[in-house]
Image (cartoon, rainbow, N blue to C red; front, side, top):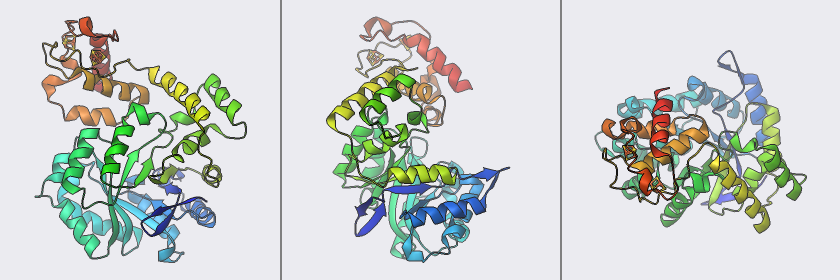
Length: 374
Ligand code: SF4
Ligand code: SF4
């Protein structure tokens, strides 16, 4: 196992995610999870990530139980405040105590403000809910060893959060992979985190499995460069080039999948320049699939009679369309005033006249509005 430094700790480069554990009929297969945890520990994994609603709360219980046979200081347990549900904001203390009880521990090694995004940023920053104050107090009391946050939101939200709480957090968890470096502006987010001196925990290294399923032609080009490497391994080799990355959350739904993942993390083999160039060509191809070629040049600004933020909406369309759904775009759309959403496009075509990329904007707005209805 490769290890990376976080302060004075040695963290395994592979972090075991527990959002998609093996289950049957909605109940987590505890015996299977125990075998996975035993295998992970035997192979040197020491970072285990859970969440309040994963498997309807069972993930915390099962992972806590599976780890309980090991000395408490031999692994790092990670949990999060579930701020993606706005109803949780006035229950921070109750939820934290429940999480401790479910996991059967008296401290968390790492604890995060979960999923800071457009939908909840105001609540996270609102002192009346006291989320920050409560978590900082838990840290002072030793019940949280390291405080951080995870974010799926856009760059501006990240900035807003850091301007308020940059002094309180010690790490950030963001979506980073070879597609999102450009597609979701992860490059700019990394630069911002660097300004605050924050190490990075990576989520979605495989973009929900999409990067493990390249076309035959794309896979063949990668195989020609590294015949012995699997396609999923490329996503991890790519991340090995980022020195600010401490660990990579990798979900597994079976012992077999976990073993495959762990095997990739036994060696540090970052990509060469030639390999990066090939990968970037593939990224270009992926970004053209089901997306529109908006470059966010803003030439269309001021041309829309409905005053829609066209580049932003198209960026969200691209995210939603490429992902084949997902929660990110709908989350952000809910924070946009109703009269500025895609369905308010009247199809006048004024924007298209100035668009250098010839994006079929009104058609895309209509398509996006229909996708959001589903
Ligand atoms: S086509 Fe739609 S987005 Fe474009 S200017 Fe007209 S109303 Fe605005
Ligand atoms: S003019 Fe075209 S490419 Fe530029 S921001 Fe508007 S839609 Fe995007």
